Image (cartoon, rainbow, N blue to C red; front, top):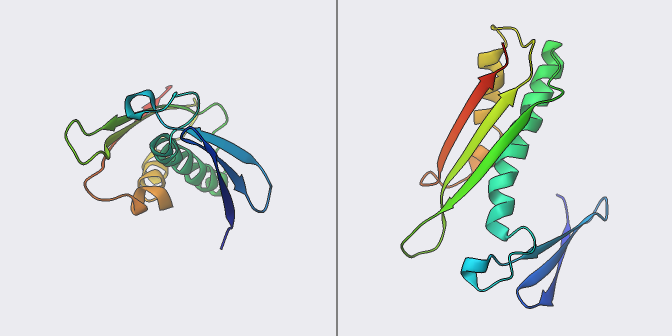
Length: 136
């Protein structure tokens, strides 16, 4: 169990505090949903959480395989439904993998990404459009 504390700050903003570290995140509603869009929205956190979770689990897997993932980057897109109810319809994650990852390790890393806890927790109707680009 990991505790969090949420404080509603008004004007559709929340402050979220991570219990163990006391790190904080400010959220804001997006402009297209009555907010100012000045920080991550709740659905932004879900979409970015998918990419971060995938990268983290690949990092764990890479370490076990003796492979370094330093320099890995990803572009993440969140696509909302156009018709009610408002929800995330699709999350795009485009990984740019660093050079030097052996060919036999690549499928293992990709499987780790697709089976990370966030990927497995999302509703099946949320399309996870994930790709891996290798430098060599």
